[in-house]
Image (cartoon, rainbow, N blue to C red; front, side, top):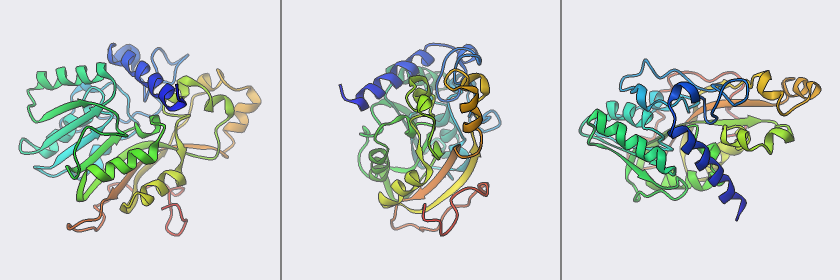
Length: 294
């Protein structure tokens, strides 16, 4: 079995477990089941509850941002959500696109797809559908979507450039994406890089911030911008599972950074290619003009 296939199997297993439990005992950000003393727990999650369209039963606490808040979805748009889970971002996107639009959620975990479909049925949404499939080979035609969103999912996919190419393919000319994800500055300690729980927890599968942004540029996107950036702090009680006291001190010295970023980019096309409004300025350590990372 190829390493990428092993990683996919690991993620599918972990997220199947999450889909089959309630949020309260398993609430976590991007992974993890169990309590805060032993799992990657609630490190990255942002509060969705004030967003219109929010459905509590569809919020499994698995995100690292609020991409739908930044996505500038318009009435009548077709929106694709990558790694749609139980449907939370899809239902918020549906509020924005309205009854005249369409929302397609894609997830490769059958239990998640089933859960999302049940939630859509309960809410009576007939313009939200969920498809089972890999986001590096989407079950969607070319030039379908006005907007693509995703919340803390690309870092879980072994071939990230292929996912970005697929996003380019499914977007209409002039369409755009707003994606929240995890990126790195500097190298993680080896013990964190090689741990399965840290991979499923959206940490060890993350790539360097500059590499992430360059992949978006290489795929042909324009108007690439950081809409939001925040540091992720791994609690000491989790680090202690992997690192010695000296290694924890070194890790927290500032040479390595884990960040949640929300990135906007637009596919060239016939519509205006001016960047949409950035709702929140990124922090000072984000991708600065002239730095080469964009």
